Amino acid sequence: MFSRNKTIKIFYTLAFLAFSATVILMPFRLRVAQWPRQVGTIWNDYTDFILFASDVAVLITISLWGIAKIVSKKRIDMGPALITWPLVALSFIGLFSVIVSVDRALSFYHVVRFALLFGLYLYIVNEIKSTDRIIKPISIMIAIQAPVALLQFQTQSDIGLQFLGEYSLDPNWSGISIVNVNGERWLRAYGLSDHPNILGGILAFGLLFLAGWFVQSERRGRLVVLPIFSAGALALITTYSRAAWLAFAGGIIVILLLTLKTNRKALWQFGWFALATVVLALPLRNSIFEPLGSRLGSDNAFAEVPSENASLEERAYLNNISTEIFFENGLLGVGLGSTPQAIQIIYPEFPTYYQPGHVALLNAATDIGILGATFFGILIVGPWLVLFFSKRLKRGPFLIATSAMLMGTAIVGLFDYYTWFLIPGRLAQWIVWGMWGSAYLTEINTANIQEATA
Image 1 (tube, rainbow, N blue to C red):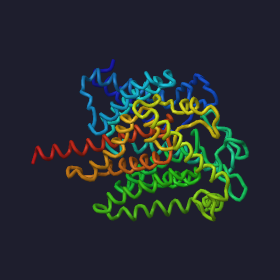
Image 2 (cartoon, rainbow, N blue to C red):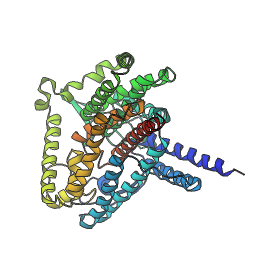
Image 3 (cartoon, one colour):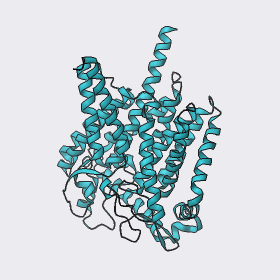
């Protein structure tokens, strides 16, 4: 029979394994159950109640950790106020939005999700205290998604992993995300996710963490991480997600700015990354880089390639519509997660798919009003004010890696809505906030100890 301390340790270990599974399953579209709630012509994933595989991992993580805390009678650290209280405010404002929501059941469903994410945030703040603690699950996540994405792109089809949630993919089918190159349809890599943009964003966040870990780590483990990073970088290219590319670039700049003062060898470490990625890219160089021109606008592609031009026009149109809805419902919003339904009510005839505006902050504003958008904005901006103005922060490896991820999520939020609205993207955003909050707390607590013993 286990002793009390042994039992507590087992629960903590199992909770960490469940959290690791959460990170690994983060981009997966694999769902355990789905309760259809068809609302007009809105895409089902916007309206249905869905239990993702990652949701099960989150529930197990929180439950096991909660039991461990109760049995051990240890206090729960609520985390840094600049992250914790805006998250609490978002949850309560979301709950209040149920009253005014155009789809009350759906808004309540999202409120429950917010509550679970806050529980996961508390777990991360309390239990994930270093880069080494989470490097393995992030590496495994990338190591699973990258080969699938690269094979999809190389074969221009799915690879038969439907039992893991993979879509059936054919670039000639309507609704499949493609890049148009001189009239030829190129399939964008989905991996095991719902969309190339989601896969690209989550890969970018994970790659930034690997980069932050790599430039500060000792030699041990680098030979394993290096090929995973390179394969992930190639997979990121094959998603052809411009927002994800920008997120990755922005995060790398953050790492360089925060490391060059104390670790000039960081440039050499990035050189190894670049060299390994180029070597892996050589066999695929023609196919991978050919569609880049269309996505980057070379040869007037935005004007001459109908799909690229239509994509940009659609985003601008949806942002304008969401802005109109915000101005009309700016105080309380239309209900958490209910913006597509609000658009359908106002515009029964619509020239494109019903979906939120492609800016996360705007989406928060239309969903839960100006106050909710304010707290969401604090979550985006607040950490950077602290990071650059606090003299107590040493800006160690954990804080650097998580700051790069934080920059990545902020940039993605400027061009897409999934870090606010869609389950995988929202999960990634809350995990990044939790990791940054933990890194911040770790450095502040270290500073307090040093000051007390000085």
